[in-house]
Image (cartoon, rainbow, N blue to C red):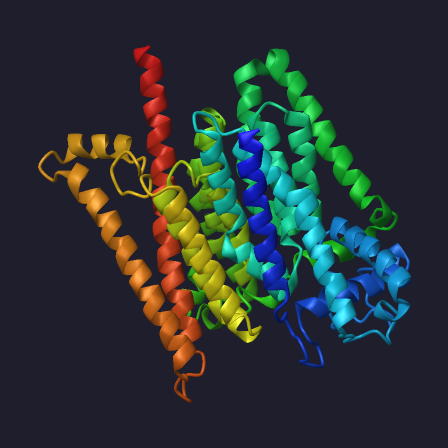
Length: 510
């Protein structure tokens, strides 16, 4: 009974913060002619309600793709249609074809905010609660504390309930999938993950470690025995779920190709806006877009991304474990964010989901990463007029982490899970005293990172950039965030590679 009491308190606090943020502004509020993501979601409801399915992704007089055309997978379109059916019953003017463009009213804002709140409540929050309840070897209060920290993560709250999107739907499905395969509900997990992938194509960030983990489990069972049967069932589940979602778009070859072109718009270039990844940061010094043609940019980004995540995926396939799976999700998602083609600033949320799942395992680094990810969204949220919610939610998250896990927020060798790496390093460099130097270095980097973020935030908010460099502060935020993300990428790769090696050694000993 006590467990559910504290968990209920954590959920209520998370819901209260979400609704409080939703009272503020949203993307593109009062900014014609295109407005922002709020209008994009409303327009998708208009299109899916008034046009036949075969026209949803096609350019026409009734569906101008230059005006927020659909560019998410079919499940997003079905969700928009569901919301549109409810909206039409309340007020048909909200989703009337053509005449509803740019519609803004207090009643409609309440409706749109309620749809995000309900999606969060039904899909994402139950998955978080179940995940925290399944954490072993900690008390009921600590499970509730972990849930509170995850539910108070500022980035997801600010983007979904402030800026305005439905990321909690795809992340919720992905979390259900992670839960399923982690606890041997492989078919349900695969189905949930396929739903996530059919809701938002950027869930490709999680796809490689997901399928590598399942393949590794099948290999462990033996492909001539139970493993083959499991592999066939998983393949059938994946194919059937994709077929059901895509069935209306398979009637014509050109229609299916058009949907794929909308989902993967390679003509937009290597990056579009200021984003805290490698390509945007490198372009400050070397204009990659000018040096390489677009096809070459696509090839280079693909090769770098593939090489960056290959070692982790191989390790996970050969030595699958739920813990290694969680860390691999963080590492691979970071690889996609840092090195892949056409990344948006909001895509960092796809990395923060697995980072939230390892909060109880590496509290300091995970909380640090989540803070940096929130900081990287600052330029976007400033444009939306969300500075106050950004500061308030970041402070609430820091307070929750410090209050719920004060003893675990330390930078010791064991707390950082760097024991196997330090042991290997000491054998190679016995005089360097890595056991002392590495934890101190991480602690120093943490303090330096937080100091720079605080100072840069104050400068960005208080000062105007030079006229000749209007994007100076935004670029600095992206560059500093990218440097942090590169450190995290190296850190999680080290954990995965050396933990896997340590597991093999233990097996040999036993």
